[in-house]
Amino acid sequence: LTAAGMKALSKQQVDYAVVEVGMGGHKDSTNVLQAPFCVITNVYLEHADIIGPLREDIAREKAGIVHSGSTLVTGVSQQRDRAIHQILQDHCQQVGAKK
Image (cartoon, rainbow, N blue to C red; front, side, top):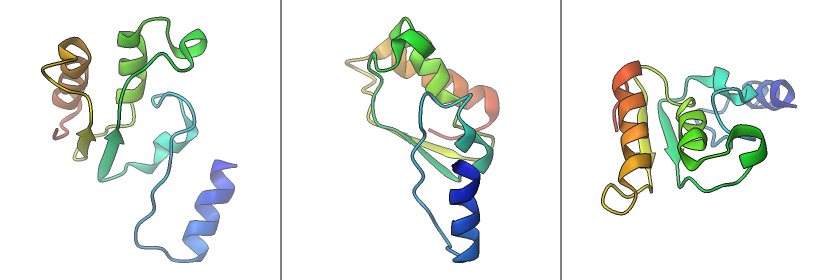
């Protein structure tokens, strides 16, 4: 389905597209896009049975959408959710992205 969606976007010659990651991030098929901006709104226990079990595990998986040169925009609060925020920050530093 992801390939069909990408083909449709290419055929329409769109300049920008908002593409939602299906589950997680690092292993999701949309991860091939190398987006200039990535958004992680929050990190809850959704799909914990597959990409968890801990929120920290889920944060690491979600961070996988961020690539070198991209910018991460997140709703994860540095004050209220320090550990999750740090995981995202560390990933950005590792891959050469901005947060």
